[in-house]
Length: 154
Image (cartoon, rainbow, N blue to C red; front, side, top):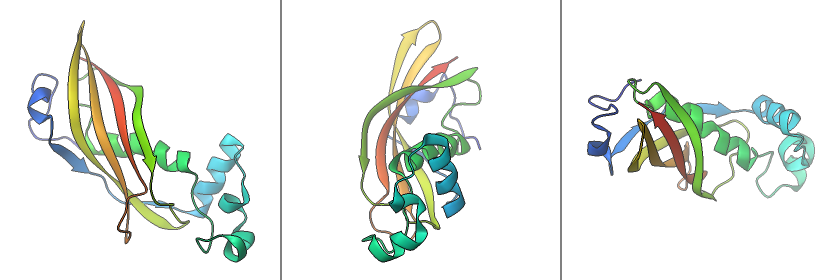
């Protein structure tokens, strides 16, 4: 998706503005299990459905915090956070992350992104900071709020 009028030369005009909201994505047990296999984080609260139904305060399994954090990149790309006229957009880091509400297996999440700042680095490089709110369908509080940094190459 592209954001009307949003490009490398006009990016300063978008500071403080919401860039968009992604589509909903299901965080199902298969995705949680795949993340557990990939990372080696196989805590029972994520992968043992029977034990989680009995013992978890959430009534079932929940997604890993880092799984929910990892969804931000693809959902931001869907919105068009990296301008189409940038030759590259690279992960540059995180300034702040707060995990607020666990994502239960089967829940749907989406990312709401606002451009916080733009810093010209020279040589056609621009660092953008966005605030990402990973919302959970039907929940009052988001799963997480994260300030992410991306390096754009014009």
